[in-house]
Image 1: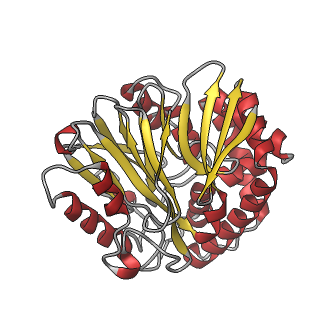
Image 2: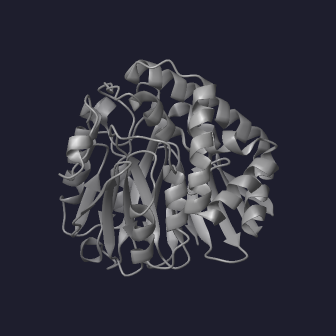
Length: 369
């Protein structure tokens, strides 16, 4: 079941163990009140953004209808993840549909906004994340690193957690996520690390959400199997996914709901929130990419090009960088968006470093898988 282990600078660590249902029950019980708070905040966010950027009047009922159409696909795609969602709902005293709505915020906004091919006109300082892959040849210690900022509505800040899952059958994982949610940015005991940044395409639909996809990928014992779990998913919306294993081998995947493209990775690679793969570019929604994504992409790439090799401390500094003001990598409630947390993963050592909130302010701590 679940227990609360630690709390520092607002970062609570939740550890759960047992069957997949028990993992969920423990998580739901440990965060019951917060899960309800996050659900309410995320429904409000989806409704507001579907109206502002997609021109659609969306209600909680619309989101629930999309979830009802999606959940059978989730169960077929990853039964173990579905079992955990059932457990979270039971532990939190909520129904399964609303727990999945909470997990699927980013995809649900796109489905709601782009149904009938509505066009998104994102603000110049809109939300996003800044991610990197750093191969062994570019790391000072000869191991590979993968990481990112996680930027979303500032209202998510109180709900960020480190979650350590120890299933009775399967691989142990450690990840940064939010209360009641599946894996977001994390690593498993086999040394497979996975993270994501948001992109937007016009083919959003009912399907499995990005957390379902990452959660299944982290159940895999090899990089190849994790990549296949992402590529083969009946995805609801578009995301960029990055993966790295203990050898430092890395894969960058840009995915719309229905298409995916692998991007060659060598040395250092950066991805923010605009489409880079030529196969996905025609599907990108009009009005994106935003100025912020271009600025962060260029700045982080420049920092990684500033010297031949980098330490973990260097990487922490890059994620705390303020060059560019409202378009900086480290974000402080710009247009209601903040860096809710940052993660740097080292698959070779099975360790990840994480900070709650903007990387310039919080305390970086080390967590082992």
